[in-house]
Each structure stands twice: as structure tokens, then as C-alpha cells.
Image: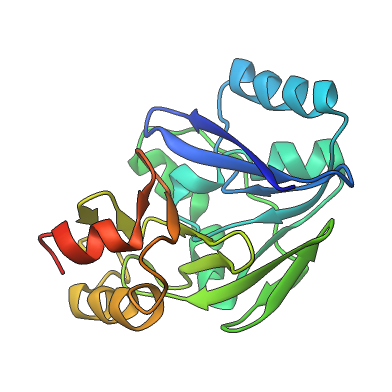
Length: 211
């Protein structure tokens, strides 16, 4: 059975997700731990559960979502996995970090890039990549059909959507991504968001003022 642990990390309260099953393998999504106590919190949890991180996934590469990538890469010897259009954010992460008050080192680069429709596996689990630009170039969501949930990053929130006023953001593109990739999922699909509480596709279909 798939389990999830959620850590809201850094001043932007980014939800870092750890998904794991009985095999002991786990996927870390949007490693955003920045302060030493946050890194320790993640490490202690994984050690106490006896988990082996085998995937480090990024829904997108805005600075607040990648602050823990280097820590995870160095600690468990895994490289981040992301869409190719996210690379420019990594290349300029030091400058972006300074803009938002973060002193960051040059981020580790990916060895594997993912694309729309690709299946990613860990343990006994499968995640389908849904390409969903609009909030940022390279934004993707991860859909788990068997467990009926989607990890939406900053694409869709409870009664809201991702901001589109940052570089590569575009409102019309985001709305199209949401309607074509997320609103076609079943109403009871759980949505794990990049910030804040979870929601469901049905709830957003009925009550999201942007949709």
C-alpha cells in the first residue's frame, strides 16, 4: 500500500512529498528543505522508516521547490529528474535565489529528463507524467492512476491556481493545461498541491473561481 508523508518546508511552505510502499523504496518530490533542521527532519524520517530514496522528482524548478535538491542528491546519491524546459531555472538558480532572499549554491543538474506521457516507476508504483506549463516552463504533474491521485505542483490549488506573473508564466497556457490534463481526471481524484491543503478534481471543477 502506498503511503505519503508531507513536509511543508522553507519560508514559502512548499510541500515536499515522500511517497513510499512496502518495498522500502521511495520518491521524494519537490525537495524544498533549506535550513539544517529541515534537512535533518527529512533524513530522520527516512532513516526511521528504513526507506531508500530512488527518485528525486521536480514538478517545476522555481527556486523554492529546489532548495533541497543538492542535499538529497549528496545524501542519497540520486540526481533530480525533471522536464527539459526546467533547465534554465537551474542554470540561473543562484541569481533567482538572491532575488527571493535565498543564498544557494549552484544546483545539481539532472541526468534524466522526462516528457509528457512517460511512466516513472519506483517500488511497485507507477506515476504518469502530465506536461502542464503555464505557471512555469517545464511544469509537470504526476498522476497515479491506481491510487487515484495527482501531484500538481503549483499548477492547481484548493480553489486557486498557480501564479503566472513570473518568468515563462502565462495565464491562458496554465488554464489550458489545467482543463486538458487535470479536469479530465475523475472527480474523486485527490490533488496534492505544491503549497497548502490537498483538494479533489471534483471540488475544483465545481468551486474554483478561475475555472
